[in-house]
Each structure stands twice: as C-alpha cells, then as structure tokens.
Amino acid sequence: MDAQAQQAVELSRRVAGLVGSAEGRDGAIRVTVGSAGQVEALDLDDRVHELPGPQLAREILAVMRRAQAVLSAEVVEQVRVTVGADSEAGRAVIGSFDTRFPAPDGRDAG
Image (cartoon, rainbow, N blue to C red; front, side, top):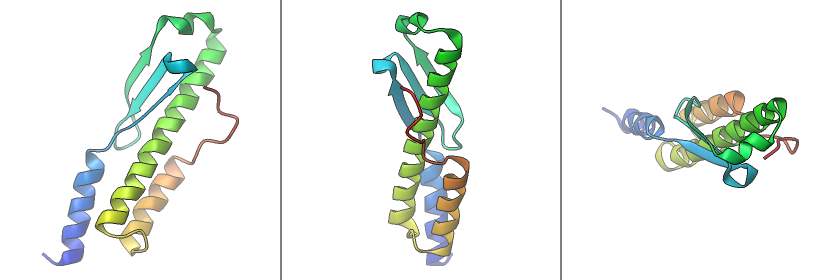
C-alpha cells in the first residue's frame, strides 16, 4: 500500500473514533455526538424543568450544533496530522464536515 493510501486508512480509523461534546445552561444540558454527527448521549438535569418546551428544544439543538462543531474541529486536527489539510483528501474531508456541520452562529442559545 502506498503512503497516501495508508494515510487515508489511518485518517478513516481516527475519524471513526471521534466524538464531540458540548454543554449549555450551566451544564444542565450536555450532548455528545459520534463520528458521523449523530447524537450519542443527551443528558439533562432537573434545571431544564424551568424552561418552557420550545425554549428547551432550541437550547438542546444549539448544544447539539456546538457538539458537532467540536467534532468538526477534531476532524480538522486529525486531517492535519494524517493526510494534511492542503491535500485533496484533506480538503474533501474537511469540506464534507463543514457542509454538514457549519459553525454555530452567535444566535445559538446555551
């Protein structure tokens, strides 16, 4: 196997093991997402009962988006140390995560 293929396999292995986590409401809402951005864990403590349902839903989604942004940042780091962020493969992987999980804007609550 050539070096580029080995690096791509290593990147794939590393990305598959990544998670992203974030919290909001002073730790009352915690979300962990898996390597594909899917929610793996959602932890809510009793303080969330203070919120009306629509606000709670918005805050959970905002924390989930932040967890996905953390995941994307982790992916960028793994790309950088394996195939290089300027390589064709690196740009493709980073672009894929940027498209699926854009950085949260300042309107996100939490």
